Length: 237
Length: 244
Length: 63
Image (tube, rainbow over all chains, first blue to last red; front, side, top):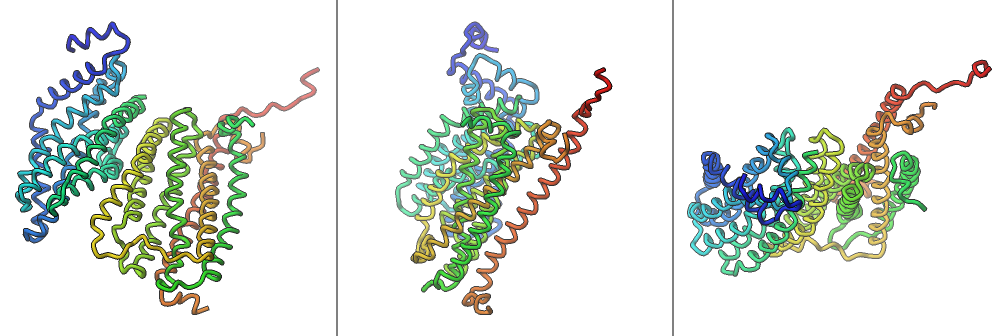
């Protein structure tokens, strides 16, 4: 435990920012230890994206139309695949219970974990997608817009996914149940995100789409940690 | 009138039975009147012929699918806020009815869409949002089945219902946005036939019938849930018809 | 009557819709009533097991 954590034992209410940074640093450290797991998740993204052109004709126009959608849906699936990692390990060894009992506010700790999840999952996908956009004959403006949209959108996926992950903690059939619960909530981000790239391809501005994703991000950033913290407490009872 | 008296399953059980009974009869009568209006009184539509008569079941089921979700979310909020078992039982009872309404809305919408606009499924905003609403219902039901501890299930499903309820308007808006961008040359799928007064009357009567039906079925299911969960409590003896 | 059933040529669409609604409604009613029956039977068994037998008033005992 860091000295910051030890010092806060004297104060009944922990500092939210300290809790956030503590959870963020801890989860990043743990994630870095299993680099292979992160690599596999990225590889999953690459493989899924590569499969789609193989299932249709490699017609450049068709691929360019499909591209934004495929790249976004694969990002949703990659996010889903990595979500159980958010709480499951801590739940299994009792750390989550200790986190819930700690003086730090649980939403702050959860926010830290979600941010770490995004840094290890969403951020790499957002940076990799423009490269994969080349497979779909997307031109430069479209690919940059894709990267921007994913950068703003993937945090929303992590935030909403965290609520689902907390609700399904420790349940059998967790993975598919998690997908059923969370994918409908992902729909707005998908529509605005893929729509942003489509707009740029059509010569229009992607600003309204990006603004809408940004609005989703703001709302989710405030509400999701609270909902996820509540769900964690429900699962721990 | 002390409403909190009815927060106990023991006192709500007989009341629910009486309301369900009344609403069942109401539903039957309103359905009969509505069907008469739908098939005998309402005239044939100029553009859509007889196929528009599907509207008399499509619109009520679509409305109920939305409305039941809102009511379910309301009971969920009460369950989380007041920690009452009965509020959670009411939410549990509403989900299957809501899901079936959403399914029927999609089914009737598809069979109306085919003759009216040439395709069983068109990605218009309302139908797509109703499909996602069906997924939300199924998600709540699946989560309840997956959790064995009843009280944890109550609270988890309550949180999920509320998160879904907040998202439904956002999802609807996003789908409408997406739909207007890709409208292209397709006919506007939201155009219903110009409403003659008789058509409107028939639709409203069927909507009220659907409402009464939903109340009757949901309250009866709630009664069954109360008996299932409170089995062993003394008051269930009366309900089960066992002499004291 | 045949004119009514034909629905101006749209018979398939109209009756598939109304038929589905009728089927689903009937199925839901049957299922809920069956659930009620099972719940009542279960409650009967559970309360018989849980509750002690009711005391009977025996005047002879109070003497």
